[in-house]
Length: 270
Image 1 (cartoon, rainbow, N blue to C red):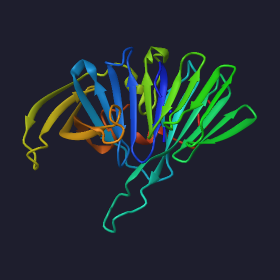
Image 2: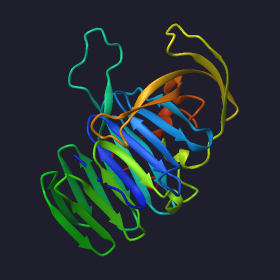
Image 3: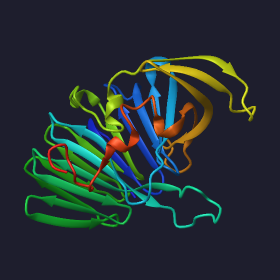
């Protein structure tokens, strides 16, 4: 079930999550995709390549995905375990099953699951399902659920949220400040890396290589992942360099630094 396009902040939701952050034009778009354990796929247009990493944490953990102190927008995602777990699985597969969006400037909170959308504006609360067809407009907020089960939320400053899977899309990120951070928000800024010493791996279709990124020297593996941004039903196969150990060396700090207490935690209130 879905949130859609326009300039600003956009989100998608379901058992598979895709997260896109675009820079100024739709063609030069940083892409984040999630499948299984939150698997983040980052398009780096300057390199014409992609980076990817997993986050392995227990179901119930909430991660800060985006925080922008200047605009007052925060996006958090909660991990949910898959319904079926193999008996010999050492790590339970998870995906982002809930999204929490906070806009402190509008005193707005939005909770999104694959079943419903709950909008809290000050003391007022409204709940909608993906079967609803509505258009809601009040002050700086416009919300629409259409027959295609798309939910579009747009704020006065053109920020907008698109939900289709539980995922996140951002178009025209010039609307986001340079201080934006978070597990995904940090990649709004240009990221540079170098890959060399490409060599065979145990799987001939997955070669290893050495990567220099953020002054860190990493061993990475070439794999293929699905990007659901252009084909929501089947996804598009995209090759990427996989960074091990929860993105260590690629993300700022440790992956556990991005854990927050609840869906509506913000940089101001946890």
